[in-house]
Length: 587
Image (tube, rainbow, N blue to C red; front, side, top):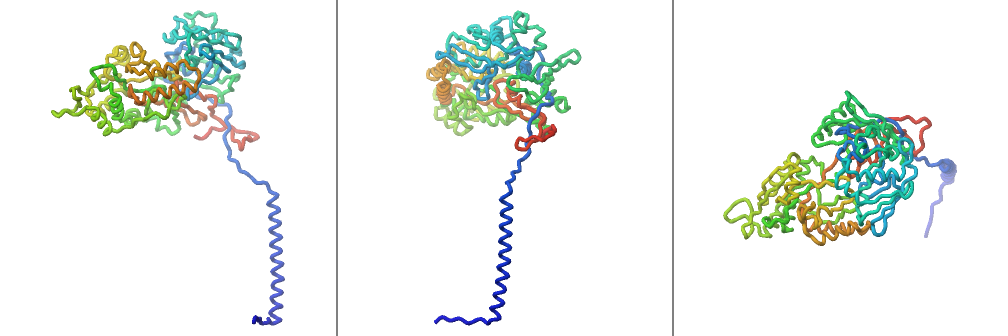
């Protein structure tokens, strides 16, 4: 049975009153929550955007340029890097190459190539102007190229010979045609040079051009126009350039670029420390430590188009060990290349794996790499039959009594002397006898490499101004006699890849051919790649927008110069202040 106890009347009455008061309190709270919700719904969400700097025009940039003034004429600047640096800002090129080595339009708006690879047609952009306001036309391009054929001008002989075999014709004011005697896929490499104004120089003879006053007061079509020479004590100490308002790719942010010449990197650094310049054209090894101590000096580093390597004479019967690919791999495995880069080169280099530069369009990242492993290198050498003689000694011999010993030639001076000493030390630890011999660089090439009269040689492979890798001159079997295939590598399959890559126009097919070549090279190692040197550029932190990638020539550090700036205005989400105030950016 369920039951309940009745509550006294007085208690029930008090409870009833309490419940009525609680209902009113709950109702008030509920109504308040509704009111707050309505207010919140009426509010739009507020997004706080950070202020960001927007570049504006203004300011001057002064660079300490290592070198001296000669002529501001791109055709006459092949042997003067300082002139090429200034010319890059004054003159425009038909095309340029990005940091992957791919051609990009500059004065050329577009181009086409015939199926057989012998005819190239280029269309010029119609908005390109010379700094005097005259339009750039096909006549300027044809005139400049015809100068490259002239024997009276200081132009490399191989370049003059190259252009002498090519016909160039202006089809109309903005169309040019090149006709090649045979297909040559790296042809575009040769079109990245400054174009000269025909209307200013067309009446001058090639002989007279060398000393023409034009070379001191040039007219170009680039982002900066010539303003004046800076002369002190009757000597040219610098060049002042001003932003070209009508530049076809947009006016640069910086109003003026001034180059001041210094005889060496130490002088340029001293000028920076004295506040005379805001940049140093190159941070060389001798000033690196001091430059790193400058708190406001930013560093920009890019790979140079050079390869340090050890050439091996593969055709000398007195050194059978060089003819064995397994021994060549062991030789590379026994070299502590990272130690060389860190200790001798102050980390201003990258370990090399082959003859084609990393991160370029032709580079194959899947090639096998050989890391430093002295113990494994010793085992590989022993496996081929070179052992320490039972009678004693430090140099290995084979069963025929041939000693694993040779002479390593290297250029005089640093860093080669220090590098050669480390190489000898590394190889001696493997039981290899190495004698060092320092030779002046020119003599090393002419008297030893050209004549194939050497055992091994430490050298640099210089590919400046050659974005297309074209390894043909250095590794094709036909170049083993009289050419630059100093190792005398005789590999028919590798040579076929290089032959085809020179005549095939399709970039996908060329990439495949170079990939196959690199695999072949990595497996055979006809020479021992060491490192790719780095170029370091120093610019004050006040200068913003600076960036550089791998270089094919030192002026490539100016690839982004149009985006450099010294001043900016603050904006939020792109909205500018009503009265923007220029301010130097904090580093």
